[in-house]
Amino acid sequence: MSPDYYLYLSAVLFTIGALGVLIRRNAIVVFMCVELMLNAVNLTLVTFSRMDGNLDGQIIAFFVMVVAAAEVVIGLAIIMSIFRSRRSTSVDDANLLKY
Amino acid sequence: MSAMLLAAGSAPTHEAVVFWILAPIAVIGALGLVFARSAVHAAVLLAVVMLSLAAFYTAEAAPFLAVVQVVVYTGAVLMLFLFVLMLVGVDSADSLVETLRGQRIAASVIALGFAILLVVTLAGTLDSFKSVGLAGAQGPTASDPVGKGNVVAIAELLFSRYVFAFEATSALLITAGLGAMVLAHRERTSPRRTQRQRMLERVERGGAALAPLPGPGVYADHDAVDTPALLPDGTFAVTSVPEYLQISRAVTTGDDVVRELEAGDV
Image (cartoon, rainbow over all chains, first blue to last red; front, top):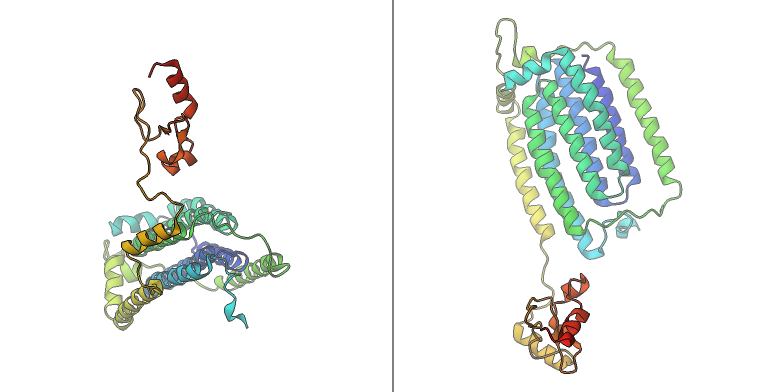
């Protein structure tokens, strides 16, 4: 099977993730959509690694996973502290930095 | 193990079957993640997408990443999401009010345009790109039927060319752990109230019962906590039954007890 299909699939998944980031309000769901985008990019990296015939793509996907794990810890801690002060996880409620 | 996974992944028809079964599931799961009303459903659907991606990694001769995907993403990251969801309350539904008018439609149009852009670009460029395959990098080859294997090949790269980046991630992880602790820490703004203070406040406030609450009723055939005690005039002592039992209507209704008392069979 041609690996191209994986690239199309990952393009679709990335777009769906971006759509979720744009239309969802719950900060946790927005964050999950960001994770979906990261996953889609990982699939691209693995596929390109296979097409190119070297493993650097897989190494970079591995580093993306490590960074994503660290990012989730911090992001969820921020969401928790916003929830504590505002009693809400809606991204519309955190607008103090707007002006 | 990895050789077996590689053998399964390198068979073209197997890979096609895996792909055409799991790709629709992944896309449907991703769409469900975007459109699910409940955040918990969204998390479970994201788990579906991540697990199918792990299967794709296996099919693409990357068994190490497939395992890491299951352990780190599905196991750790997603469970962290579920923890936080339970902490903030699962019923915190999304508001349906649009703050920016037409945002959803505009976002959908932009997403569609972006998808078309990506797919058309891919279709235009991929024809000139020939897939080499990972046999040269991790085996198996004609001369070496087993090969180095994916894990060994990745380890060799990780601890030679990428060793500095690898060490830097340890600093990143420590920083992230510290940051989470700092963000989650809450400074106490008022001094802690002692038990003595709380009791004094209770007496000053008045109204509340200072003595212990009455125990539940004890009859010949009922002595459970859900049986209310009787006051001298035959009414029920409301405080003798736990509040939660009253809310959940688990209390033995007073009428039963009165009827039994009046019938004289208690």
